[in-house]
Amino acid sequence: TSAVYMDFDGDGLIDTKIQVLQFSEIGRLGSEKTGNLFSAEPGFSLAITLINPESRGKISISDNETDIDPFYLSTDQDRSTIKKSLKFCLQLLSSPPLDEFVKEIIDYDLIKNTPLEYAKSNLFSGYHLIGGACASKSQFKSVVDEKLKVRNVSGLYVCDASVLSTYVSSNIHASVILLSDSFAKNFINEKNNIREKG
Image 1: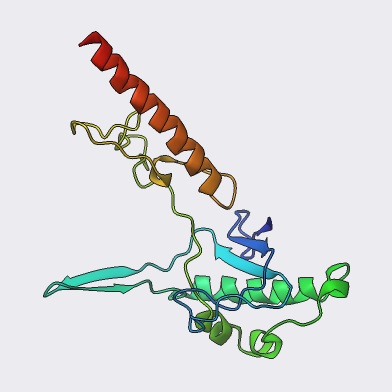
Image 2: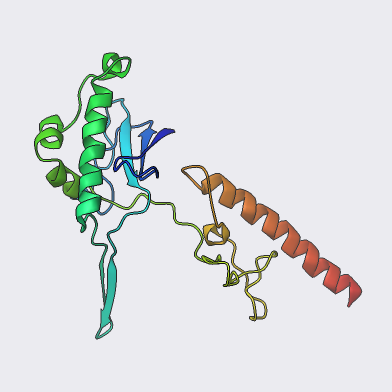
């Protein structure tokens, strides 16, 4: 995949990532087109990700029932950014050199005329979440130490993307595999060393 990073609101900070996916996507889990995820036709998709969306979801728990509402595009800023992103994508796909490779833009009229309606009917979370076990501010310690051991809890480790505080690429899969492999080898070696000394 490849991506372009944009500053659509002109404040000097990147607010949007538009990623080229090497398959035709026509919906994902959570979108209204669920069940028909990928097109059988050859093609590519553009995935729009707001870098720091203002919209905030909520989780409600009552009577042992959980209600999760992500509140996607619930702020004027996020709605404006998604509309500008979709307009940019249409212009990009209609301009050289890409236009000679584009046979059809699925839902072109809907994207052009009612971009928010299109966005809301195709919305899903494509974020690869990281950093949940890391310190978000300098005055707080990370949940785990350098060996991925949870602080102040005996025998508990965390080895997933939550231990990564920052990441420069789009997809965390390869790094998490490498992290888990390294952690497993170190963990086994450490336990073997303890047995040999004991």
